[in-house]
Amino acid sequence: MHIYKVAPSLPISENMNQKFSENLVSAIKDALPDKTNVAIYLMDLLSLGKEAVYRRLRGTVSFDIEESALISRDLNISLDHIIGMKSEDKAVFNLNLIQRSDILDDYCRFIDNYIQTFRRLQLYSNSKCYSAYNVIPLSFYTQYDLISKFYWYKWLYQMEGFENTTQFSQFSFPTRVSDIHKLFIQESRFIDSSSFVLARNIFVSLARDVDFFSRLNLLTKAEVQQIKIELIDLLTNLESVAASGIWNGGKEVFFYLSNMNFESSYTYLECSDFELSILRVFSFGSIHSLKDQVCKVHKDWLDSLKRSSTLISRSGDVHRAEYFNEQKEAINTIL
Image 1 (cartoon, rainbow, N blue to C red):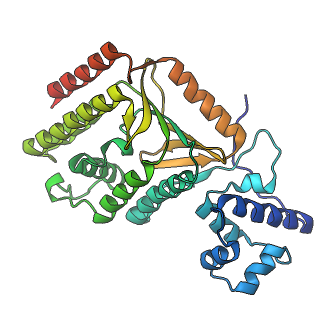
Image 2: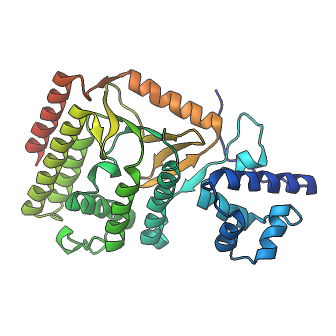
Image 3: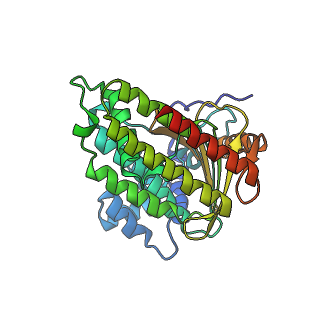
């Protein structure tokens, strides 16, 4: 079994620099839409003049580390692939984390990274998303104002402690977050096929969190009931989507109920041009990898979760009805 780790920095010779630049230019051309002017794109992204960009494209000047990182981030290009790493037990992981010093900006950048990936997937007609969730995913609840506000509130409470104990009613949900959530949903609708493996307690877990904050006297009884109404409505809508197997304006979707517990939430995205492995960490954070071997292990893990789960979309009427009824009854009991 291999243990993947971030590769250490290595001295780069002139030949390696040249090969890196050649591979990077090739990767940029592959990642950009057809007929895009590569030079103009790089001039805008790197704030360089025309001649400076053409020197880099010709290979007479190498891209520096900062320029390479900007390109990698903007086009979701894996630098370890560009370097040509052959080692089986090393991989570069991109960190998509949120720092306490600049939470709002970091969170918006975190969501924007997903938006840029979705936009890249729109260029292909065979895009697929495989996910396993042990918490309610962003794509399920962003259209619900109070649930969205509660997740943000809960996360800030964990991160900052709310030393002065801000009441839920006094907490203002940032407009920037609401706006970028809407853009996230809009861009994610273009994925052609989605498969979701759901942990059986993800909706009940939210109800328990709401109850916890209620017992802290941070939510009023009226607010608890309003969140409960949204949560029940979310379940009703998901049950309808699961029955039809269609969502997002005609895209196919498959829902599975896991028969085993799993430790985190996982997502794997693929199309004919690239694949991306995403592991959720620290609530809203994630780590990403484009390395083939990491993606293969990740997809194999998701396939194993799916094999041990029960399909409830389209078929599986009895299991589907039992599950959603159990969730609603449990939520009614807790809240």
